[in-house]
Length: 230
Image (cartoon, rainbow, N blue to C red):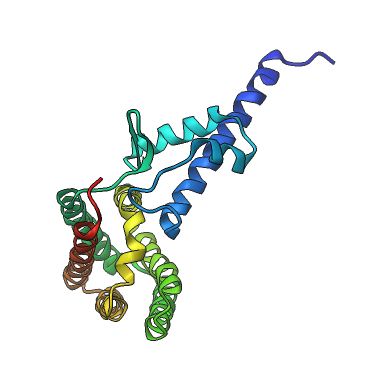
C-alpha cells in the first residue's frame, strides 16, 4: 500500500506544533501559579531542556506569549515575563469590571437550577478557604466560581474577551490575594454577586461584580506600584 506523502510531511509539523502548544501552556500555568512572576527572566535553554526539545518550538511558544502580551523580549538583555505598568493595570481592570459585570447580569437571567447549585457550592468552597487563609485553595475556587458565571451567561464571545484580560493579569493575582484581609473581603464580594445572580436580579449582580473587580484592581495597582522598575 502506497503512503500518502502529504500525511507523512504533516506528522513532524504537527508534532512541532503540539510541542509548541505544550510549552506555551506550561508557561501560562507557571504564571497563573506564581512560579513565574512579573519581571522574571525566562531561560530559553533551560526551558528547552525541561521539555527535551530543540530551541525552535520553545522560541515559537515564547513568540506566541509575546503576541499575547505576557512576555517581552528586551534587546541585548533577554526574555522576561512582562511587567505591566500601573496605567495598564487600571485600564485592564476597568475593562474587566465592565465585561464581568455584563456576564453577571446575563447569568442572573439565564442560570439554571444545576448551575445555581454548583455556584452555591463554589461559594461555600471560597468561604472555607478564606476562613483558613488558604490562598492557593481560594484562587482555585475563585476561578471555578467565575467560570460557572461565565457558563451561565451563555455568551461565549464576551467570555473569550474576559479570559484574555484575566490571562494578562494572571501573574499578579497570587500576591493580590496574599494582602492582609483580601480573602475575607473578596469572599464578601462573591457572596453579594452570587446572591443577586441566584435571585435573578441582573442589575444588582452586575453592580456587585463591578464592585468586586474594582476592589481587586485597587489591590493589583498597589502591587504594581511596589514592584521595582523594569
